[in-house]
Image (cartoon, rainbow, N blue to C red; front, side, top):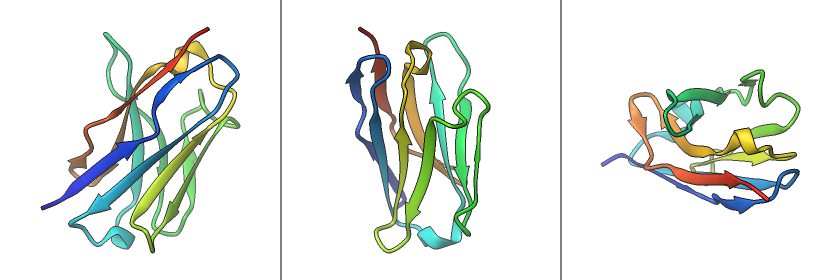
Amino acid sequence: QVQLVESGGGLVQPGGSLRLSCAASGIIFSFYAMGWYRQAPGEERELVAVIARSGNTNYADSVKGRFTASRDDAKNTVYLQMNSLKPEDTAVYYCNAGSQWGQGTQVTVSS
C-alpha cells in the first residue's frame, strides 16, 4: 500500500520559514520524481516544485529563490524548505509521486 505522509506545516509570520517533509512507503522511492503542490481556498492545485530522481529541481516562478526541494532516498523522504514566506503562500501543501498523493499539510502565513 502506497502512502505519502506530509508533515511540518503550521502557522508562521511573514518572512518566516518552515520545512515540510513527505515520507513515502510502498514505493521504490528512488524511481520517482517527487512533486510538491499547493492549493489555496477557492484556487486550483498548482505545482510548487519538482525534484527529479537525479536531484535536479524545478520551481514555480512564484517561489524561486525562496523555496528549496531536496530528497533523501535512504530515508524515502522529500523535503521542501520554505523561506521568506508570504501571506500568498498560505495553502494546503501536497506531496506527489506519480499518481499518488499525500493528505496534505496546512501552511498559514499570517501576522
